Image 1: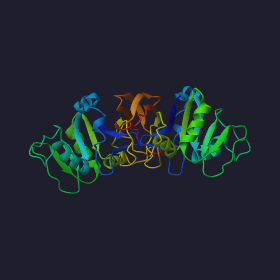
Image 2: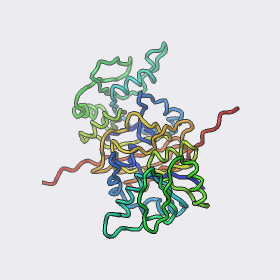
Image 3: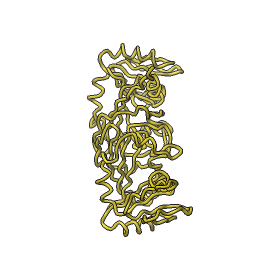
Image 4: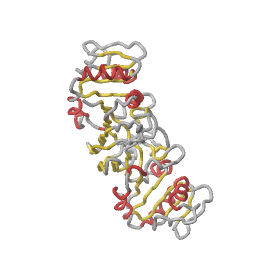
Length: 189
Length: 189
């Protein structure tokens, strides 16, 4: 079981515009032309931040319309939020707050033998990284630059660096970069 | 002949730290394991900004030491600077300022049938992009995040987007992403 950050980013390292829009992403290609279907089949539980969840309520579930869509995931989804947020009927959504470490234990139990998908945003994933709980990063690099926006992963990861496992072109609109996160070794006694 | 931005970037889109350091880059691998040798053989002329030039004076030529190294390029190098900067003995360095378009004509004449390498920084390359004079972007994506720093290309490139030509892993420390820049089409009459 691995804890994976799977996301799309612009070439200049932004996952959303400053006002949290993902509109830049959709013209670049069909998600079914990516490795998404194979990826999500191996996911046993998801975690996301409040901004990501609210974006999904508006743009995926479309809660404000007369014909809302179902929540797209069967797997348990853990939503980190300090505020009370509305659930989605029929979806297994579990609201949590505070330190990521105890929630990660719950995620592991929920995921079973499958992987944990950290959906985002970047700062939530950074908290898993800080706690030594992030195993892999898989980025769909879109063929655009945004110039500003919400950062992919607002951390300094230099020592040790990431290890590139695979780089591939998915289409003219996307490259996929797949990294292993190397754990910081404890200092020798 | 193509005008190419060839550079290294962190995964989160920075080409240098906030204080213009490239120290993060060198532990990631040997430049000879990349496509650099094949790339530079096709270069007929280079252009760079003043910050990049001053960095090279200090860290490549090592002008402040008793045994400075030679300038690494035989090709004519155009340096954009508003200030007077020292030349390098024996090197074909041409100081220029102002709009990039007339300098691009000089670069084309100097490059002959070979390509023009825009070394950086990002804002100078952005000026070539703004003028419709940038043909390709080739990024060596290092397996690190910097969290902040000098941006790869401080522009919004969305309509039209870039076209990914190739993505490949060079080592665990570098991926290479190669893009064509699509020109903005004039509005139909």
